[in-house]
Length: 69
Image (cartoon, rainbow, N blue to C red):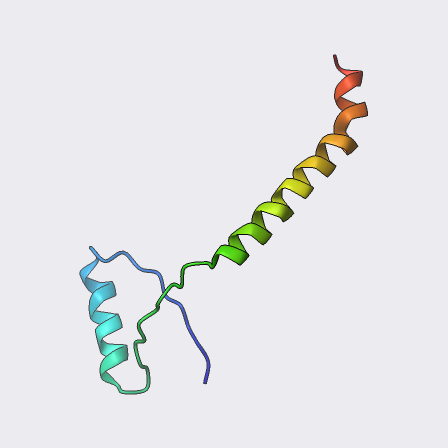
């Protein structure tokens, strides 16, 4: 089964009617989406990756920045 994500203006009556008509056909099913909070280990891994990327970018850009100072 495939997943389709739709974005629409919920103030637009025509968009709401079209969406309701699609769901009423029974061919499409609306699913609830749950967003899981990252674990402490995932947060730590992200911070380490971010810090490593920032450190590397400072080193690689140092000569270019120095040229304009």
